[in-house]
Length: 160
Image 1 (spheres, rainbow, N blue to C red):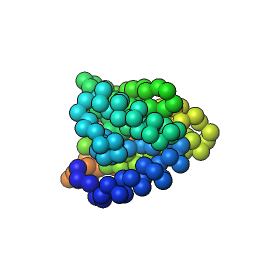
Image 2 (image 1 turned 45 degrees about the horizontal axis):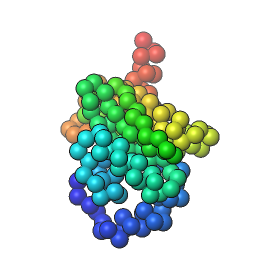
Image 3 (image 1 turned 180 degrees about the vertical axis):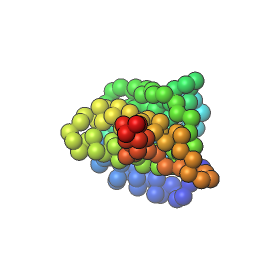
Image 4 (image 1 turned 60 degrees about the horizontal axis):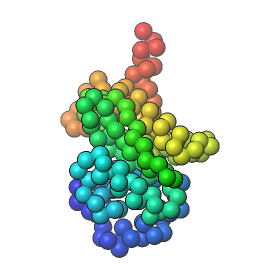
């Protein structure tokens, strides 16, 4: 929850690195840092995504972090002149370690396969949802565990 670097580094990200990206996948805390906004509801996240997308002039902004609304986990995507909510089922699991990294990697893989950024975002959200669901029943020790990115749960069901 605390910043690891000062405003000079944030400025460098905003001016030099992020405008060169096809997609940017900040979590809620990172989005707040990049925009200087307080993000306390879904509407404020949408506004921050649109603001960042316009400031960067091009990259898709996918704010991960799955705001929980009832039984849904909702992420926000801003690209070109639109902002969309991507919803998926909420998974009751403590095995969420690396979910943001998995989302970013899945997004990158989709882009590398030629998917449009908005389609790659939807595919990445679905991939992480399956990985969370697959790990939901795992009890691997104390704290947050890993996702089921290799579909071990699905492979086990297939053998039954």
